[in-house]
Image (cartoon, rainbow, N blue to C red; front, side, top):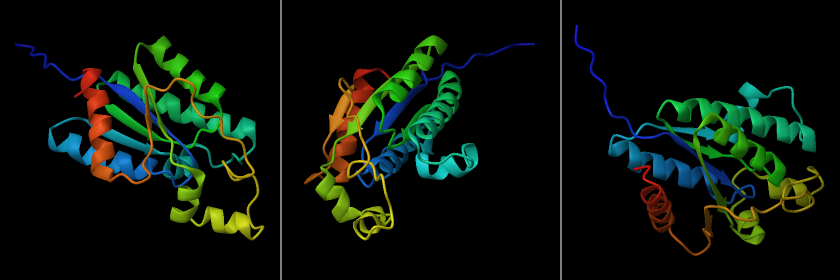
Amino acid sequence: MTITTEVRAAGATVWLTGLPSAGKTTLAEALAERLRAGGRAVEILDGDAVRPILSPELGYTRSDRDANVARIGWVASRLARHGVLVLACVVSPYAAARDGVRAAHEQDGTRFLEVHVATPVGVCAERDVKGLYARQRTGGLRNLTGIDGEYEAPRRPELRLDTHNRTVEETVAELIGLLDKENLV
């Protein structure tokens, strides 16, 4: 019996953090499409899609948000250990929670790249893809991250992106540049 081993690309987690409607999911979807076309194993963990499955009992207190971030980070590190490039699109407003995910990846021996999608809050409010900013303005939503809820911007992300006045393609090219520099594509 012959056992063959295939060389697989290293896995990693690219953690896209930023305000609601900053463009995290849009960028992840466009990046994933390009990478998959080249044969790269990619998985998107979108905070909005994952939360009802991994964290349905959690609310939006700081401790609940931190628990949700930790759960998504755990799943991401498991996928990354198996050669998957994970694109995690999670508001993740608190630096300590993101740092905890990074530390867990390091402990697991998996790569973690923090990308701050640093779109100005005014632009996010104009996009308002989920209607959150409109609900907040009319009093139907409190503690909206970046408005009346705290957001701690990353101090030293591997990449800081401003999607304002840039095309998705331009921004994805910058992400691919980071992945290339890190030998992940």
